[in-house]
Length: 197
Image (cartoon, rainbow, N blue to C red; front, side, top):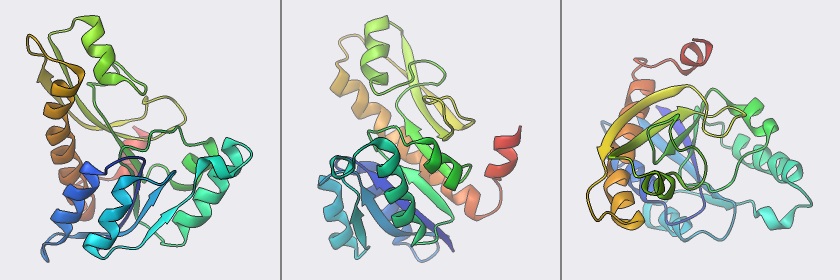
């Protein structure tokens, strides 16, 4: 059984999809803990699904590196096989990458390497492109530049807003994430090998 720790900053829509999937006895992975960098709304999913939660508030530490060290200590307690950044709206410091990568993965609402960074959906709309996408990557020390696990194109429709486009991207992100977790658990995807290639 693949053990997942999921880190969030917001409502945890991708997290809920993983929790729903892992409620199936046949699904070969379980979320063993949910963590956040703030008092995130999605932490309530822990109580709903009976999964332990923790918070490592960024503002409680003097700098990003100190926060990262505290995050490493908390995540490591759960001995995860994979750490999923699921809407964690903060770049993790290099020590976190060193501690968990390549078993550190992240969803992104664009077809990388197009539109990296915190505003992938807004940037795609501002660029006037006719299509964008969703990506799942191995986290490295770049900004959304790690090895790509999976991605899929999504059309930008006339009249799309940031909200409407993001609403169409999110289900694709969830599907890519759940499929990747399945593939890792079933040994059809080797993150170490992907990171080396």
